[in-house]
Image (cartoon, rainbow, N blue to C red; front, side):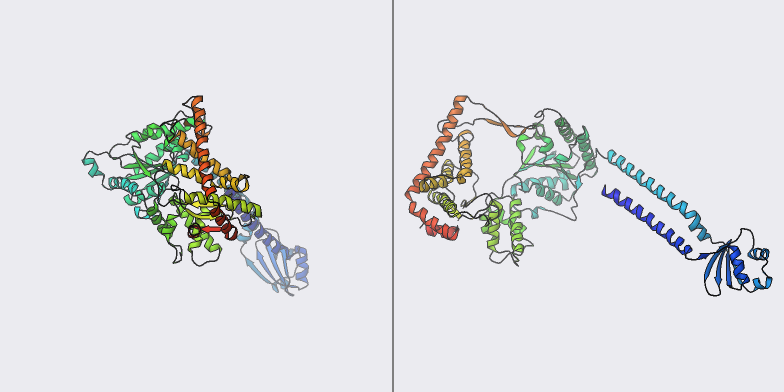
Length: 602
């Protein structure tokens, strides 16, 4: 719409300029006094005329006082004849400088032809513009079923495996794909069939798209990038048409890589909906399955797809001959986090004292995207404070900002609320410090961040791939440390423990129904989450147990929570003096770091 208005404005501006030119010429003619032939004869008889310029039937008159005049005579009659008819003496006529010129074609064009030509040209241009718009709509209609896949420019933005830190096993799996794209004949000679589809699985932000681009960069082949949601439209058949067009383009440019991001948008299990728009999605999925079956061994087209929801994919996508190879991309460990931070630190002026290994230690569970965001937040904070370099306190503050939100120093607590928050956080910190299987305390603060009035940061000594039963029990006791401290020291409870109660209830339910760690109910799972696509995520749970078992599950969950509360109460009752030390330090300094905390509790 903006483009149309812009073009119309240009047309009207052009028309206004032409109108201004006409106005100029007409104004110029109006400045010269036009007289009749009789008046001219009178001036000639009175010897007032200096010269006359004849152009056709137009007379440009110059008087002896240098005044300009204009007159017209009859067409076909000479000026001399006209003057003789008015009885002007021949000697008087001879005393006037009379010049005869050609008929002014330009003047006739401006005054006679141009007023008709300009509107005609304007109308023609307007009709041409409207036809172009209609033609553009027709072209878009014809290309509606074409694929909107973007081809990455590998020469301009080349990415290789060197630019991807960590994910060593994933890169080794993808190197086989690179080798096949570079030297396909070597595999064909041995009778080997390289997988047509490779499914990249991993949590959000772990670098699935980056790995796909790096695979293309290593193989030096074209890279078609499209999102799963771009296939599906309101009109039935459009998605399938786009799939056909995408594979047609890919076969023409083979060897190449097709990358379908978020394939679960079209690859969800068929029959999960109630019809309607889901019929179009299922048709699109069917077309993808057919196209993948249509590949022969000599077609060097590899399909990479990424998703973080493999549980909802249709089984037909995962059978041999389609996405029969799955590459798992885990969250990075401490070494990989250090390597990722090194990559994202390039171009950022870090101070000499910044140790990225310490940052990696403090960020367990962070994905590659989280780490990139962390350093970006640190750079923003340093620039906001007019610093020349990014120092270590800024980076550590950025970690807490990513985890909890920015500090809310304007959110001032009353003295009583501040004291309750101090006892609450001291309860968390003390229980975590004294229980053997709890994560060590790294920081305690009563400064508000995000929605929390205070916070305690516990970080594991090393990365964990699995948790034990004892870990869960101590973790639940730590979560109830703040609740227990409020009850013991104030004999009153606040809403500050609501988040802790949600977490401990979730852990207790997992121990009972998912992990098989409950002695009474035994090693089995209870219930199954069914995702109802047309209603929302995990809105329905199919129960595979009786009402009596459901009652037993509730009893065991309550038992876990009560046992954790007993543990927290015992620790706090036996160490009230240490709680008072922590509270006094928090009330004075508001924040306690790891070294200070350990020294305080020696």
